[in-house]
Length: 163
Image (cartoon, rainbow, N blue to C red; front, side, top):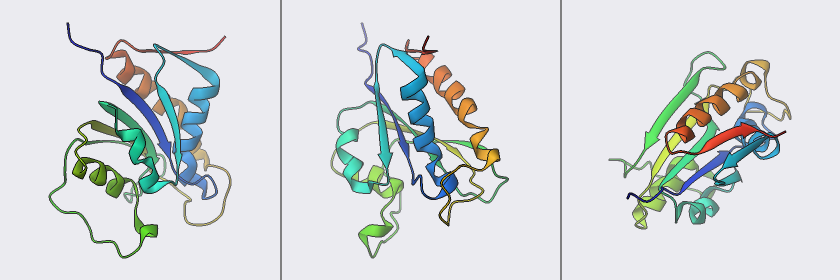
């Protein structure tokens, strides 16, 4: 009998930069309004960069919710898979430039082996202080939760509303 994979969900981003806080809003809604059975770890990754490495140590699959500025219409949804070292790691001159990509790469370099599934939304506002999501992005919170529900169901994990 195959063992059940260790699965985690992590939201990342900066809640003070408008749509960049999308991932945090999704995990907060999951924590406050949903029950996951069997329970899995839900992580508010914020903007912690390399400090997130310890969360990647003992998982098989991690779903990461974020925003991704790809130049498309705000609210466009994306799904990316990261399951190994990239062929090229961009050079960084400051620890302030280290983001999710570099954190995942560092985890693989240190010997971890997991699958990262990144669920992201195209932001509208993310470069200036704004404490709320744009309507185009806020409307996608429930859609991302539906995608997570379908993904978790594939691993016999249920995601249901509390109450």
